Amino acid sequence: MKLRVLAVLMIFCTVLSGCMKIEQDTENLMRPPKLSVEQQQIYAALNAAAGTDINLKYPKQGDNRSAFVMYDVDADGQDEVIVFYSRKDEDNNVRINILDRQNGAWYSLCDLVESEPDVDNISFYNILSSERKSIVVSYNKVLRDQKRIVVYSFENKQLKAEFDTDYTNSLIMDFDGDGRDELFLLQNQIAGMTYSEAKLVDTTYYNGKLDVVATLTPLYETVVEYMNLTAEKNAVSNTVKNGEGSTLTETTAQPLADGIAYNIFVDGKTATGPYVTEIIGVGHNLLKNQLLKGEKVDYTKLTVRKEQLFTKDINNDGLLEIPMGVKIQGGDYTSQESVYSLIRWDNFIDMELCPTNYTLENEAYKFSFEYPGTWNENNITVRQNTSVKQNNEWIFYEYLKKEDEIGDELLRIKAYPINDNPYDVEGYTLINSNDSFTYYAKLPSFEVQEKNKLAISLEEFEKLFHY
Ligand SMILES: [Ca+2]
Ligand SMILES: [Ca+2]
Ligand SMILES: [Ca+2]
Image (cartoon, rainbow, N blue to C red; front, side, top):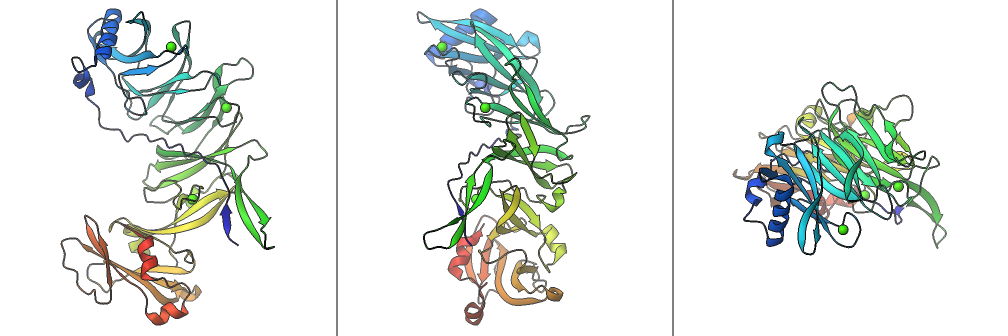
């Protein structure tokens, strides 16, 4: 039965964090006279309001990285300018100033100081109203990788903080379909804090103000850095009859009975090294650990892997896949640990992790081999060829399960450092080279090709080999 994905409308919202480690010393570079004429006028208006002993601050991430962010904050049809800066006499704390233009002249409308050293990003979302956007600013804190998020409203020419909290990662979107965006916030585990925590921020029913409406804690206890967040509409499978009377399975987006419409896949790095994915369901005023079936989730059996691989749609079918490290049957475990490993990529359908693809990842020799559709963790074994001096060859066999018995040899992949002279490559096909290695492959004999359904052609191999 073939799995068909039917219009699962997905939103991939990827939030990168901690990847902008290089401090942008653009403040000095961008100061006058390099500003445009209009920016100079704005800068002069800022000087008139804040003095001249100031430094401009540039948002480090996101879509708005200029020191002068043009945005119609009061929705009157004309852009205002939002400027971040610091005063040298104030320990470099970030100030936010909004300037407007009247009769061609810029002037400062309001000014607010925040006790953080830098601006991470500024964005605009329908948080308080579906009609008007709120200003969302993320500030970097003094403590490395820690941030603070503030949602501002702008009324009567004044900025007002409507919500304010520390966090490390965010995903902002309309999770409950009411036309307004909610904030999904994560705080990783930092020294001195007991647990990491997820929060959902929305307007409350009792006073309409922004507040934390749901929390989830503890999350996986040793995650020290959340690296990738992706959201997908909850996927369910339905068996349908097609025209010829046979059945097939379709996957569609459908909220759960508890109102959870989205699942957020949270990829994190643990304190001891491996990576893990947690799945958090988001509904109206609700956060839920979707992998929790009993009292505790054994993530080592579900989503732990040593490779820095993140949740993504690897086969372009509209559904996200979560990477999971699995044991190679009858394999050579010592070298698996250090050199190569098998990754199973799972969809999350009907609240279950469902295997879709497998990739053999070889970090040391920089290649990835995607298993053909007929291969899986149970019918294939991989062994490093110990008879070659350089330990640079991997052999794939059919795995027969009983007593670790192996069947037909199905594939050999060999890698040589780019400057080495390849030897023992008779009967192999040169596949390609990258900056580090030259790769060779050997496909099975004609006889095996004929009788074994697991055998693949060179043409198929080349489509599945990534380097
Ligand atoms: Ca305006
Ligand atoms: Ca909403
Ligand atoms: Ca997919």
